[in-house]
Image (cartoon, rainbow, N blue to C red; front, side, top):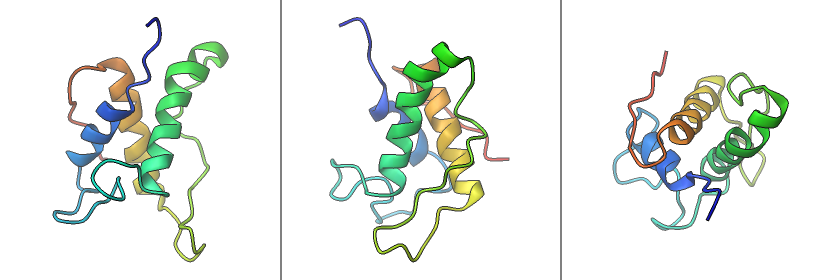
Length: 104
């Protein structure tokens, strides 16, 4: 395998942030499958950072896209998106180690 997109590491990075609420599956629907909003957004950020960023020379951090919930009622906050973007970057940088991500 020549290319690994470390989405699992990105999820573990996110679980180590203030976005993770105990006993609530913030990033997964059932403990395994990604949630439809934050989980999939995080995975998309990780794919972008691993595959697209090296080609275009631009990191996912600062991307203005914000995921919406399935019912379109709630929108991801800028803070949530920034933290998830940083989790993706940290996962790509150290794909076999959970990293502490700056939330400021």
